[in-house]
Length: 281
Ligand code: NAP
Image (cartoon, rainbow, N blue to C red; front, side):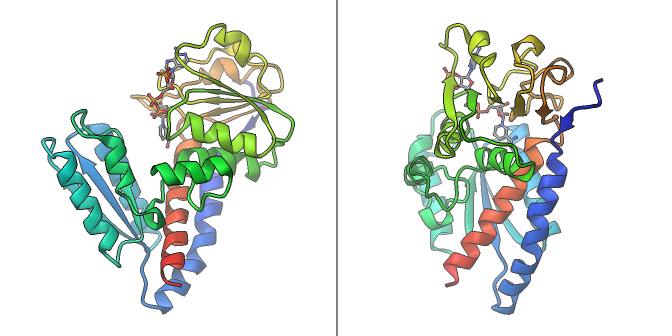
């Protein structure tokens, strides 16, 4: 293992985000408000259940509230939308997170878009996505926001850099591409139909991996001195980047675990506190 590298410590970044929330949560409590995140889980996907549990526990540790809505696999789009609308109307709920993916028979877009924009703390609605693309979203998607928070925490420059994003999902690859572009990077967004992917990645001063394939990004794809951010979270705590190989050429790199993941959760908590403050104005 190479040791003279900047290992971007997601736990440290997450702590700094959470520390800044403590006082704000206390201020809200003086007004009788406890920031509350509602998570909605449809079906029995064990990985999703784990993520939802982690988010609930993180809320508890900071003195926030979390409500968990578990719906059966057979839930229809109409029933899911109705459950979301109840949360929209509940003044005690400040953030709503519908855990992705939902079962295939559900119209996921309709379900996401049922979330009231003021409570869309993961930037999943069409409006939230558009606001992020324009650069004025209150709540950009949490994982893209976490990636930007890591770059900011370590003062890693973005302006004028060539960022190569691998992945174009609406919750990760596309919004992080927009955020990097809005901060004056030149952005190449790659996907499963991209040709000469490795050559494109080799041009990246900043490389974001959001592919969903373990150890997908190889060491010799990384330009010497590049900053590598691994959003991947595959079974067995394995990222989308072959860390041991990529750390050789990288200037800075996130590990998995303890990279983007904890910052994503901290960002979700921050957005929920932001939403509680805004809804209580
Ligand atoms: P996704 O919806 O499955 O999207 C994967 C993207 O990768 C797609 O755009 C796909 O291209 C692209 N892709 C697949 N194979 C490729 C290939 N061979 N070459 C180039 N591109 C390829 O996944 P996601 O939800 O964005 O998540 C991506 C990763 O991030 C997963 O590991 C997930 O677990 C992780 N994640 C982590 C967090 C966190 O908090 N750390 C949060 C969310 C997700 P097409 O569009 O052409 O299909």
